[in-house]
Length: 225
Image (cartoon, rainbow, N blue to C red; front, side, top):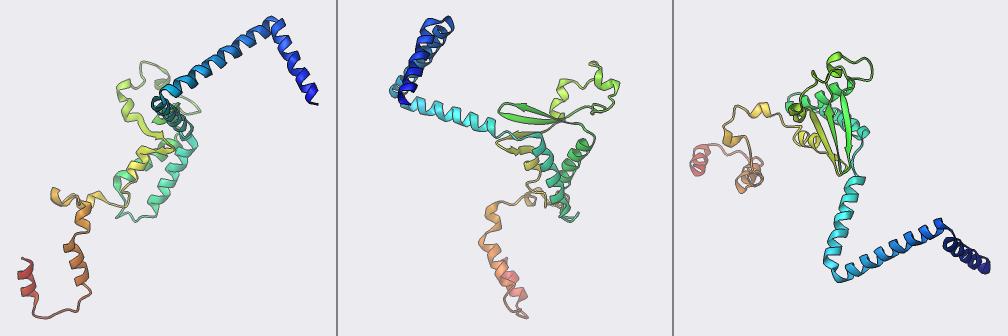
């Protein structure tokens, strides 16, 4: 069996040396082999630059392979709507709810458009009347289409590394109703993380478990002042 394999290999090389197509294939293989040898020699001479290049190529390949699909965007929008429904209307973020409802309305109207841009994906809003069925004249006439300067307003989301970042940003604090805090002064509308776990707050939290003491309210107010 080994002898048959050796004979087949010799027959292949003889065919490549005898025919024009074989000579072309042989020259092509020699060019690729020379390029690989030069690449290996360059990597030995400059290992750091070669490692950075390989890492960059790996990162680009990973980003291209993890671009989310159009179905994943629709699933994320529906999941976001379900998450908002679990919250009471009083604690629901109005901005997040408006954004999700806008996505669902465009989805039902067939106006969501998906574009794969090699390393990322974008979802944008198509003009009215551009669904799969009948189309309006304003959507087909190039003089009546929205100008390019309105493109940022039509952009709905950007998909990168397996996530839809605009939807993720809008749902970050979806359980916080901003309208409840608009009447507060600007300095009280935002709290820093260090203020949430300060010693004063911890002391006030522990005081609610202490027994009530009558007649000491004035003294405590003076001490806090």
